[in-house]
Amino acid sequence: MPHDPRTIHRRAFLSTAALSVAGLSLSSGPASAQAAYPNQMVRLIVPFTPGSMTDILARSLAEKLRETWGQQVIVENRPGIAGTGGVARSAPDGYTLMLTSNGHAVIRAVNRDATFDPVKDFTGIAKVASMPSILIAPADGEIRTIKDLVEAAKARPGQLNYGSAGLGSSTGIAAEVFRQATGTRMQLVPYRGMPESQTAVLRGDSAFAFTFFNVGGDLIQAGRLRALAVTGETRIPQLPNVPTFREAGLTDFTYDAWFGVMGPAGMPKPMVDKIAGDIAKALAAPDMKDRFTGQGVNLVTTTPSAFDAEIARDAERYGPLVRQAAGG
Image (cartoon, rainbow, N blue to C red):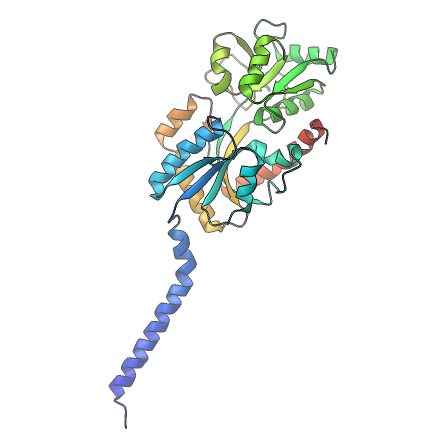
């Protein structure tokens, strides 16, 4: 039975159209999936306790990302290597992220139980803030300048105590960088946090410690602690009379704490770029700047590749220093 030419033509047209649509769907599938990100809840892990600056930054950022993404962004506090290790082992799908500090780069130098690599097992997404540290000493003591402190330490090698919130903390790293830059030998007394190390300085139990403005600023401004110098390139606006370390004569001393968002290794670049862009938008909000500038926090934005490179540099520079201080 002969076929109607119109029927044959119609079937051929429909077949070609179907193949074209299928091909379009297959080729645009991954791009569409990434463009739709996120389409479910995102977990933002903080490997620190509630109330820390890392936690405060994470909660403020999560609030902004919820508005942008239209999805829940849940902050989960999981202190220590358990939280960080969990992120390293998670799927690289963008639904488990982490906001941490620069102590991440030296985590294996201070904790031998860490089975992950702080560089290779993570994707740097965005550095979100930097924060200068302040070197403090007893307000009524004889040490009034950085020069006084260095001279006292060299006159009594290994006898001066200094406190920190642990070798792997931001202020702990600052203390070790200071010791290296000055060629001094002093006795570390570890504390559970900056408030405790500050109290030791107040009592005169420690010759010095490093702190952040949001933790020790009130005590400094009240005259109960003496600020000798601040890290970073410029002075802190809230403490205009406190010099930078460069101004105090330590031209080789450069150090700032940083905070940033990471994910597990293997995240797709388009997804990483999208998250980084949305974070930059969140940080640019006027209320974010108002919230953190008064606490001595500098909100910053970097590219994912620049942040990855900074993590690697810190691991290479500070890891051996901290490992040596830890006796490893």
